[in-house]
Image (cartoon, rainbow, N blue to C red; front, side, top):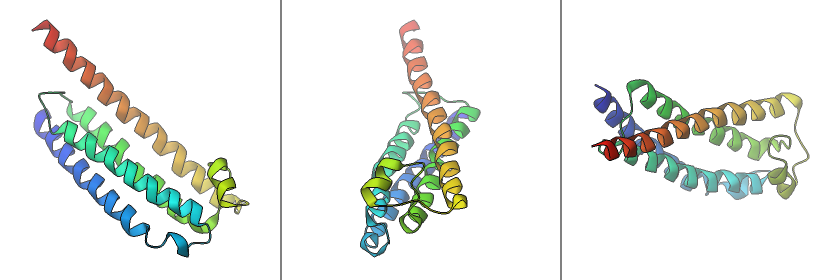
Length: 155
């Protein structure tokens, strides 16, 4: 059961990663049409990089000889990786809003002076919560990879 869940999660992540990269490529076509093109460019680049990251995680999960995840661990990895979409979509809106509290360096480079408080709050929540989820995903993956190495040494 756990292997089939892990394999299904892997395929889902592969689809998500490839879709995120396609989204990034399409988003690249409108970067110059946004009020804050530098922030829009960040979305384009981040979609490509994080799409590759999710794709890589999906490919890793499709290799049950390299690591084994329980059903709960598979769900944790999936939710953490899926949370990247929240960040990407929030940053798409930020290319129009120009918030500056959660990503001050990018905002300064874009000339963003800040947005109304509720927009700043949405951006903060849309970055902090998914970051925690993504860290959890990678913690599960790292643990599983090293757990797999320990199991091979014992055999």
